[in-house]
Length: 219
Image (cartoon, rainbow, N blue to C red; front, side, top):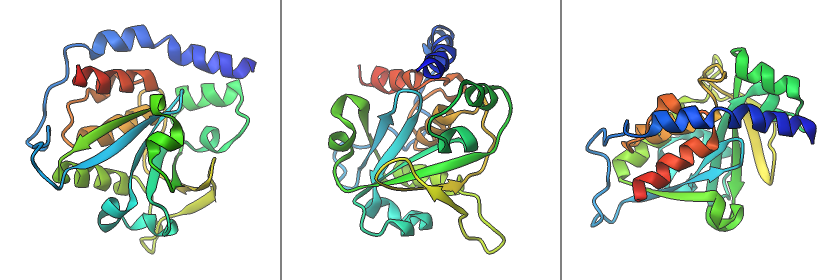
């Protein structure tokens, strides 16, 4: 559809600049990464490329001790979490105006949490998912970053919104304002960075920017 073409064009136009900035500016940032390959308590998270935006999928069992908001999905094996503009993320179909508004005006944000009962690589298709192995400490820090992204009400409870986009899923009120320089892929990059992975968060505009850095690290 036409509006999808324009949305893709707006984001794609940033790729040349962002890739130029991405090269040569990532270093290991802490003792959390890379994980010791001999450790039995290493954890794996999965970065999901949805085309325009990215999500982070992880084992519910592994994450549950460090994040209370997953209680809504008691039977799930994995959970995939994404962050984005409140209106654009929750609306289908989207419009060009929604895309422009989200990119160029600071707007409220939401988190999308989806329950998965199968391996994320199988659920989303292998070529859309990048596995990332983390130390246990790095994993906990990433989960805590996600947990801190939920807005709480006066009773310290998460704020539930509408149903999600696919499967068993839901939207929640989130912390932070969405705009071009603080977008869904920036949020994913910062979550990954919190684990100790050497990713440059200041130059992330598109999902391709993020995936490029993850795959480049493996080369």
